[in-house]
Amino acid sequence: MHHSSVFKYRLRFYGSILLVALGLGVMPSVSAQVVDKTHRDEHIGGYLIVPHAQKVERRYNAGYSMYVAAWPLMNYYPGHNFQTGLPGTWMFAQYEGAAPKDMYSDVEGGLGWWRDTRFPTTTPKFIMGGVGPNFSDIANGPAHGWGTWEEPRGLYGVAQLSPWLLFPLDGLNVKQGESGGLFGYGYLNLPLCTPKPTTEGKNIPTGGNCWTLFLNTGNFKGPVAFFLPNFWSNGAVREPRLVGQLLDTRPVDPNRAVQMETQYTPCRLASDAKGEWYARIAPLSFPQDKQGRSVLVHQDTAYDRTALYEAVADWFAGGKPSDGAIAPQGSHQRLFGEKGYASWQIWWNEGDAPEKKIPVVWDAFNALKTLDPYTFGGEFKDALTTKTGNLVTLPEYYHLENTTDAKKAKWIPVAPDTVPNETGLKEVKWTRPTEEAPQPYTTPDDPASLWKKPGPVAGPFKAHLGDGSVVTYYWYRFVDQPAVMNANLTAEERTRLQANVEKLHRAWHKNRNYLPPPTTGKLAYLDPAQVVKPPKGMEVGYVPIATRQELEHH
Image 1: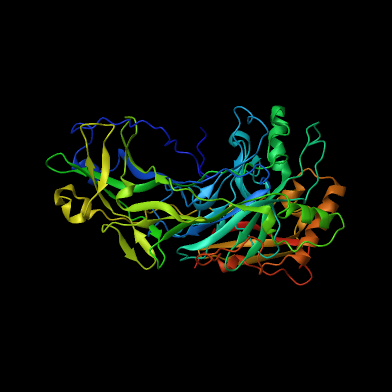
Image 2: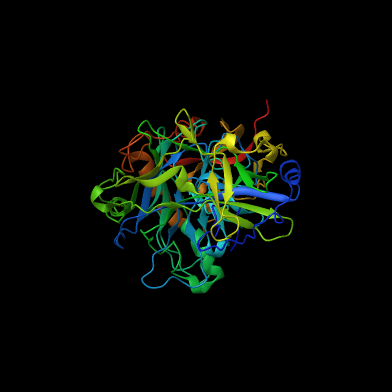
């Protein structure tokens, strides 16, 4: 398993065995726990599993969309060990038979916090999360991914498509303070590129699939950016057995898992004089509407080629223009099932001993459930939770029960006044740790680089974001942006691609629906500093490209 700091990774909770030997001799003393944290690592995490009631037909393999709540999971930022997603999904390729052996490749990402986020706040950000074969490459957005500019491993994987939305190098910013609004997103295949028989001079084909990020937010709607087919076929160049097996050529499996993956959220453990163990977790909150519902996922939808792809392909071939709105007859809203559950556990390390983990009784304070056939979330039901505004905070204190049987051991939420003072847990202060100032994101400034030849046509411009950073960006002709220059396209292919994009820029604007709108709640907003206006004369065929992002100096 390749752990990544750039995308949400599996914690392997499924079927995990409790590697815990419980007893007074296993955990250190209270003083070692609460005062001296040098040799311990304690955290709470796990999955919220979102169930689906039925399989979707194979033909709905041209993309998906869904709405997920955007909110501050924590009321302070706990530092760069913190890596947690809000509800998200994994978009894998679809195969007629078995998938290729020993090969992992998909689109994941979504809303969350990552270890490599340089300008984090309590508000989540959004990354695209394209994963090349077995994590050989990661593409998170235009000029954002794995590797270095000397040895890029996904930094050139995404092309900016929208002329109205700047994609910062640290990920798309949700508007600061967003608390429970629905963030609509998904990927649909657009026929922007055409398949080609060779790749980088080798007899390896590249498909024409352009998996395009669409958003539906309060202040921006429509296509944003897409994974260049070359991002996927690069993997086949390195490993020819994967020819025709990756997302440049394959459709997508409509039966995706939807889960919320939480990890490395701070926690403290301590025992009292009787040897009873207690835990305190940092405040964790979930959204709650006026009906008492915690809406997490809404309108998880799969699309076939009649939803959008065929109309756009006909338009590009000379037919009537497509307005970009997704055709309802090509859409399948997935029904949520009733068997959602949480696999949250408290984890801890002691020196070099194996990591230990014991489950938290989630059902004691929240019932995960289908709120209507197309909306999944939960209802908080315990007096130990607290509500502030439209957020509900989980119980902070837990007592360890069944300590004599490792298989039955569990953490039960308890009232603060039942926790002995001698544990010191009530004195724990949750504060943002002091960390080194983040390094700026930079891009190549060599005059011979793809960033300068042919280079931008306007700039520099500045965008001042709510995360405390400032983004420097320039306007490039679409096919002259560095990612497209790097995509191994012929002059004829570049001309055709530019013409297709200009059609989209003329006809598809940012203030009308593409994805089907939600039927509950309100839309989340993006940081408005990212919504930009092309310079005069560059309204069609040009895009904003971030070249630097750094901490704002006041």
